[in-house]
Image 1: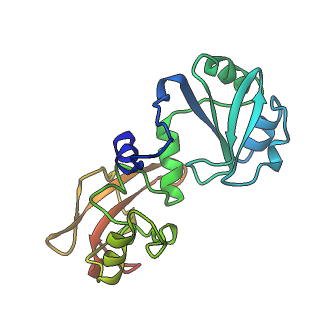
Image 2: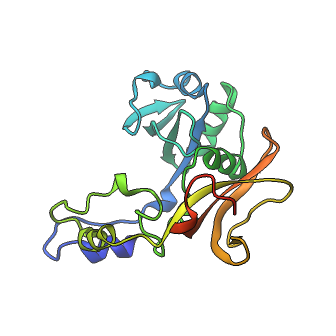
Length: 218
């Protein structure tokens, strides 16, 4: 990402690009009770923060960036604080009812919601039209770096498409597993997992466009 930004920064620009990744930490509070939990130690009304917006706030004793975003399909917040204050914030949130969980829980929820994971379901080998993300790109926008490439892709016929599927019977689909048609491989799994509440497994994967119709058995 830093290399990409540096590549497109104008030579005469006064903009400085500084990597401060190690100086900050982020945690997410997600779920139907997220607003109340975050609001309790927060100095602002958490419910007033609109979806996909970011505000500054004091949470516990920490200065934070509070974003009404998340990657679970649930309501919630992502909170960015300095790395030296993240432990205190973690404890403050646990004290008001947060239940710690890891990426496995997040992955189950985002799969149920059909949310794509970068590096798995979307990467430089797949374009937004194949991934069903075309509503997020505007190739005709003036000065858009990716505009010419996206215009060309948009105007061509798609050869493959990302689909979601449910597994019947036992088994958990994993990344890079082959997706089979009647006899031949027709694509590959990009993400998959077991849903404990439903006692079934689901996945995402790219298949040839002729196999992408809803209801197709693979």
